[in-house]
Amino acid sequence: MYIIAGLGNPGKEYEGTRHNVGFSVIDELADKYNISVDTAKHKGMIGKGVIEGEKVILVKPMTYMNLSGECIREVMEYYKADIEDLIVVFDDISLEPGKLRLRPKGSAGGHNGIKNIIAQLGSDGFKRVKFGVGDKPKGWDLADWVLGRFPKEADKTLADARVRACEAVVCMMQEGITSAMNQYNG
Image 1 (cartoon, rainbow, N blue to C red):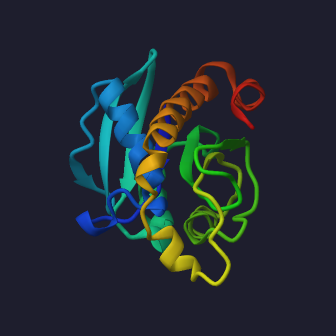
Image 2 (image 1 turned 60 degrees about the vertical axis):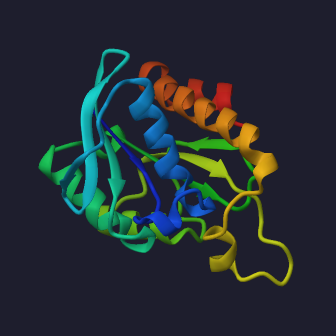
């Protein structure tokens, strides 16, 4: 069984922001595979289902980004999941909007949500899908940038990237992280 967590912030005011691309990928997976992410549990919204023959738990932490690890730790403990079965989808300012970068593990890279997950789990050994949101313009505050919305002209690029991110997650489950990285990084 895989735990697939998308990071973001709860609430209408954060919908469509750069920081919430993880939530949008979970929503895309839920729609495609007919999984209802509607159970409030473990400080998050979760949905159980099957993706291409694999049992999955889709997770959207409701703890706000910087405490995402609290929800993910509770889910991991409850389902007795191994760190190798966790896939986290989140925003990355070092990538152009819509670009993906998959990683088998690693540091937080300055991302507070990932930093909290590593602290809560005591490990950085989980798979990641980094979803590019672009770097903040000179003079901008980082929080204002990631909590801002994409320009309308990015809609198609982002929609295509969400589909590719979902395909990358499925590839990670079916073919492994190395194959997925070879196909989707870049």
